Image 1 (cartoon, rainbow, N blue to C red):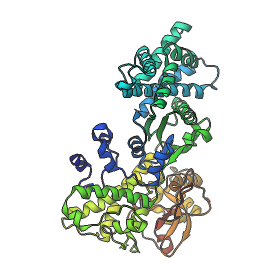
Image 2 (cartoon, rainbow, N blue to C red; image 1 turned 180 degrees about the horizontal axis):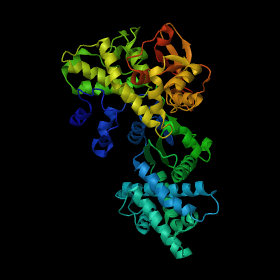
Image 3 (cartoon, helix red, strand yellow; image 1 turned 90 degrees about the horizontal axis):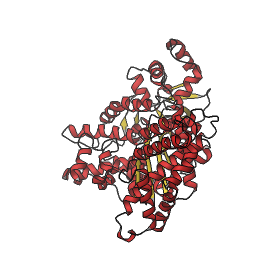
Image 4 (cartoon, helix red, strand yellow; image 1 turned 45 degrees about the horizontal axis):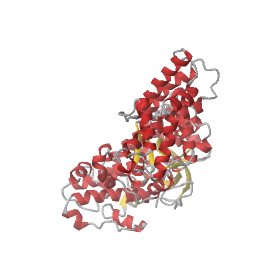
Length: 545
């Protein structure tokens, strides 16, 4: 196992790779996955205890890690993994035509799609459950096993377990049904009748579904269906939205039915509002969603957990020179741990002294990926110097942040590429001319002077920049910082006053404004400090530090 971990935790990436390692979540490396994942935090524990139907988070927030943590740490000996995008696309392309050709009413779309997803996902669970129980000698003559086996035989799924094969079986049987009973080539809306009739009764699906529930309940076993994130869900494709509407409707019904089956899928928070519009009843469909909003303490704990894996792999120097985190970690423990590697006070690019953790944190959007990238740069730089002097110098921290600012911004912008395709071009045009603090009037002038017809009206620009987290609403200006509220710390969209003051996010300032900016007004040059503004049942401190 150490050889496997050493590939992911090395001198270039001592805090580990930013991606969830797909190979390690397979059965062969199942035990290694715990080394990547810090389960001792609010969101990880909530995922296991609350069994959410959906995990909502921005790119780099750890959606995949949470899903696989739920798989490995949750009470689910039976799991089904769905290849999300291709499955959505196949449901959309194979089913939408059958639902819409010569259809008189669109009112049945959601229910029809929900039935497709119900049949598809329940059948996939039936397949996995049969594999799980069929060699159990105690259940050799169990009638539920026999019923399930008969259904799998009738539907051609006895030897095939992939969800795509389940869908193809549904499509194949539906086409046969249409030709046999209607003498047509699937030219009108017959699918609901087909699912309620032929597939359920003729093939034995209905009986198999009942047998599935009996088998799971009688043996005290729960099953989990996981569908990984759709980072670039094509919200402009009507058929994909129909497919999504059906899945949301089905997931809500499954949750309320109290079945021994849980479904959890992950979606990009950048598309949250679009997803809500696809829902037929967002109050029901989104009532069991886990939103991934991290605070600084949680992310620092995640990174410390990962750095401890590296230290354990790399020998005596790391073992003897630094103190690991205690079993029960306080806020002070975290800061003391990281100040072994980072200076407690440092001088930033503007020549202002501040805490190094504050400096790093305010250049992120509170995503684990951002911290991992920055800390990898800082610590690996110190290691490559051969001297390994810790805590590092201020310049090492500044250089580490500068090295990944562009990558941080590119990741943020790519997450919003569908929603705001003009975002990057707008930032390139405007950010070089923005101070740390500005108002609507100032932005209007810069649009007039530098827009050249490529930038839309000022209020549209403000809303877009707020939503992507490039600018925040100024809360107050202190002796050291410009404290701002940012949209990425809110569940839903952050309210703001368009006539108020705005602050430019430090990462966007670093990428698009660079080092050439020479502020004349000291107040406008103060560092922007994002305030934590969590909305929900989790208590928050209201500040990063």
